[in-house]
Image (cartoon, rainbow, N blue to C red):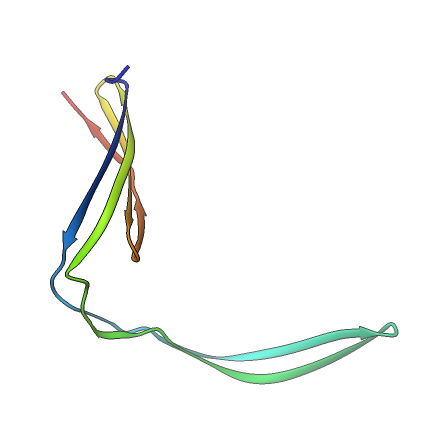
Amino acid sequence: LLWVMNFNLGAGMDINFGSTDINLKAAGVARLEDVSMEGGEVDSTTTPANLNVDGSTTGVNPSIVRARIMTGIGFNILPVKIDIPIIYYFNSGASVGVTVGVVW
């Protein structure tokens, strides 16, 4: 049974170096419309608007140490191995992946 299916669990940490600069900006024209129906009549008000979005991160350094916990499940079907790892980084997010390999 352990050759057909496996489970894993662990804890660890990543050591990170470097920096990142991401430039993300967008602009556009929008039209805001408010539609209400009072007494069976449609009342509509349209307002032109400009939309600016700035999601840039410049000069942001990563955390030197990021703690994590890991788990996953794996399946073995003849020579094919399928692993599904799940990693949770405390205060940073999570990742889920699929790994497929052939063993001979």
